[in-house]
Length: 194
Image (tube, rainbow, N blue to C red):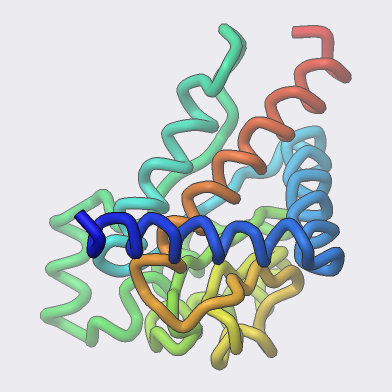
């Protein structure tokens, strides 16, 4: 029982640190606002991640295309790893390092947003995707751990969780992702009247 309590307390402590970090709270708000603006301009949001972060990417894309709290129109969002034929072909024929950058090059447009989830901030395939996104004049949002890793320099907006513990970082990523989805839904649909 003590072990379970300690794990839960560690998760709570990370979230407490987030609530005390004004810069991080502002970044969360800024991400929601830039996403609303992208949707208003007819752009889309793309997500990418590896492993558990891929699952979180898919989860957050579904919150936008499906619904969060309200019945409303779908928002254009997609997790880039969901086409297993594409992923396995490109990883086999080229390299796993380019699975996301090739897709961003193919479907990304100026003004679209690319959100990359990487607890270390050093996932090569996500860093490569962010570089391609910048070439296409897309907006990049990095979800990372405390240091930001290599994604720090590649992110227009950075959500760097104050932790080096992968499970605690991922728990905070989904919490913040939910907050952003809630804010986007509330602001966008209040403005459009849908």
